[in-house]
Length: 325
Ligand code: FUB
Image 1 (cartoon, rainbow, N blue to C red):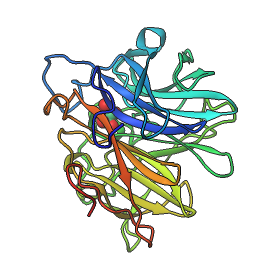
Image 2: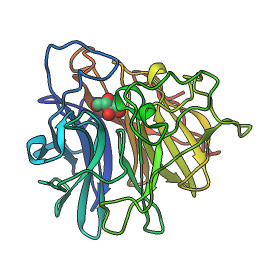
Image 3: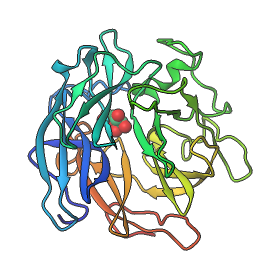
């Protein structure tokens, strides 16, 4: 499969969470549904209903769509909008984590289980207790512990939970206030709950000061991903309004994380969402853009490209339609 080309073209896909299971690459994307509705600030245009798992035998092989792995109609608590998923493997079982709005329009994270990385997945009857907002990314640390990072502003409702309970119309966050971060929580042994209520991750600048809400080039917006490189924890995420994928590093999965730089410059389309994997000694960035639909925000396509580290552990910025800087 050629790099920087849509992995599949027969359906629209977005938000790729890539993993290596048994030496094969699996990609867990959102499945965008074409419609003619308008875009809004709440992400109402992202009307997804199901998930398909994509797989690649290796980076030279064609990408396979393994068909529908989970549909909204089989998840009792879901009202609408099944957004960006992720998957984790533990002891031969595969756990698909997915955000969706419940029947009252509030986002939570659900989990569905399968014996196969491609599904079909069977959903738990209710969402994960204490889960809120969108974009789960589940990271397995070297010690066998699993952590979920998640959250997204605006359509993803992260700012509506600042008091601990859901507030439908919260006051705007002042520009000089500390920015919100993603949540982090350790998973229980059965992978279906959090050990304790999620905590908010802090992202700081090089002097250790929290990144401010008005710092739209650096503040957290949505789409977190965690990976480890040379013993360091790399939290990467989308900046939303400035349309970049950026990263911050830390010494613990709980943070704090110090802002380091840009991984991916803006792609065609409003959203940017990514994941990072190591495969056969090389590192890859999976991401999406709107090339397949020539720029329609809710008709996206997933792609991948190689990612390179500098000797000091910083990541070379990727220009999506050119070379790395
Ligand atoms: O695909 C719907 C939403 O758009 C995702 O949850 C966000 O990360 C953004 O890509």
